[in-house]
Image (cartoon, rainbow, N blue to C red; front, side):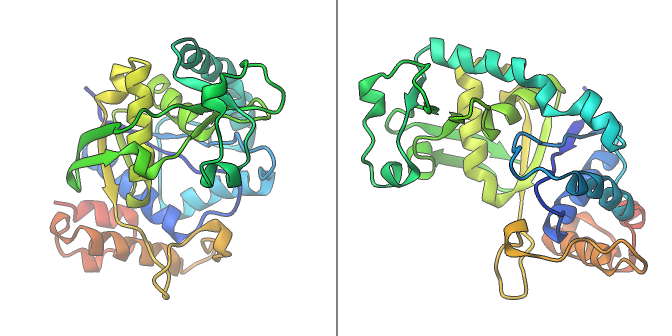
Amino acid sequence: MTFRSRIAPTPSGFLHEGNITAFLYTWLLTQKANGELLLRIDDLDNERFREVYLNYIFEALQVAGISYQIGPTNAHEFHTQWSQQLRLPMYEMYLQQLWQTGHLYACTCSRQQIAKHQCNCFQQKLPHHTPQAAWRLHLPDNTNIQWHDEALGNVSIYLNEVQHAPIVKRSNGLPAYHIASVADDVHFGINCIVRGEDLLSSTALQLHMASLLQLDAFLQCRFLHHPLMLSETGEKISKSAGNASLQLQPPFPDVQRCLKQIVQWFPQQFDRASTATTASALLRLMA
């Protein structure tokens, strides 16, 4: 079976060093395995989508030296062939399957009510077409998800402790991230998912949903959760934190810093890696 992974940026802000570092590591693993890499751009968040962010994705990947075999190469190709908006019927099919098997419920509660455990929508069994209602996934008590992680070893997570009443369909009718991500990974034949350690709970939830939907292809995926790239103050780098975007002019110091971060994460995987200044050079030093 051909190794196939993906990178999945969102056009809701400029990519930052944390994104590029994760994408570079995924690219390195894919190249080392003579595999295929998919560029999947997650654009379900209409409110924060900006065309300038979309175009920046293509520019930043080129600067970083990240090539891919599957996916759009420009904004026009993305809008006409690759947008998640084009796959809404597929997401809806999976949502209906979860609803019809009794795993979802309609909910009109706010985040504050959910956080304070003031919601009884599951008990009320509201109709699926209730106005302004989101669809949430019911998690039975002690739902435990286990898998072997390529970087962390055996992982065991109790979903109720990390995911409370997760939304799978928003009140505006659009599918939420988790169901769309699972559906896309199966649709595109992804068999290795590389992501940050902050998404362990997301992986657990997605494995649970895949089990409910009997999506064996997703359940058989390899998972690798890498450390996070932190700011100088030790905080997670994020778009919302106002981090500077990847520099697009020489000498590209940010890309080199991303490469050094990868070597610090997994020093045993590289030989004389300190001499590498480009992604291709680091690949040649990869054990």
